[in-house]
Length: 236
Image 1 (tube, rainbow, N blue to C red):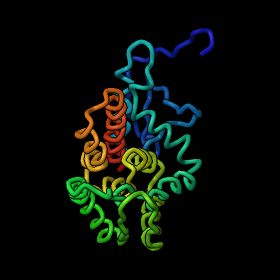
Image 2: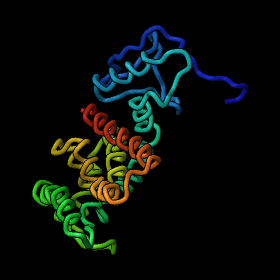
Image 3: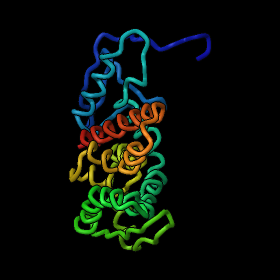
């Protein structure tokens, strides 16, 4: 920022209030806006209250990194809503190469772990979403049934911009579209999705030991995925 200017707290109280059919956050009566100057309107009172709590927790210099609900709501309004088709397409594309479809060539113990973690999710996709997927050994691409890809894409496209912002992180961090949809449907929680998405990494850590720098990065990704699950749940 030019001249060393930083944003500082100027308000005494942040409140969540209704605005039409939605909810907003006001700072001493002044409506919060997104970086693109859009009125911050969210779909539920619970989400607005979480955002208001983030603003109330700010002391002195405002720290956006400490405001994940605000940042994701801003993203939903400023980035996802204007580019909904593109974002939905990006997420839906993961159905063609979902993590849970690509199994190791060995050893048997790793294969057993992958099966225990991923087979229930494949069964859920086939039964609940009517989207059966094909598994393969190795990393060579396997063509998935067109009807299944279409069903998964329809699930993504049915999201609101706020839900899509959260689903984006659930899918991108885990590598699994089916897993992200399972969280969105309430069939699985975000922590379970994290656990099943790290089967291969945990196997490698057991073999070769934990890398401190990698562990720190994993911690940030874990926190982001858990937050995305919470955000989705507050979208109504």
